[in-house]
Amino acid sequence: MNIMLKRITHFFRESYEEFKRVSWPTRQETVRYTLFIIGFSIALALFLGLLDFIFSRGLETLL
Image (cartoon, rainbow, N blue to C red; front, side, top):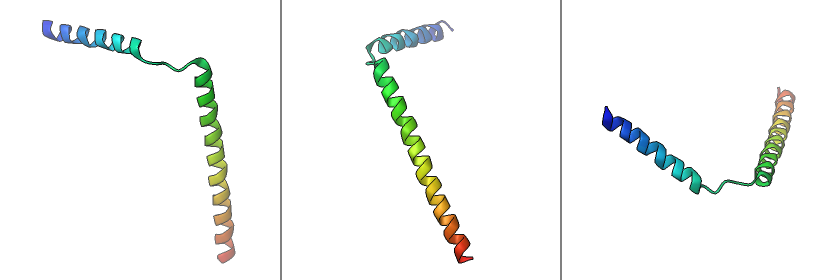
């Protein structure tokens, strides 16, 4: 059991050291990326909604 505790402790120490080396985005970058993703999602939803509307009307016309 002692070996397991050493492995777990070693894992957390290495993880902590790795987190210190990570290049985290700035607040401004995070906000910009978040707004881009939200905008892209809305645009994609509108596009797919428009396609659904067009195909539904086309199918209704055919039937």
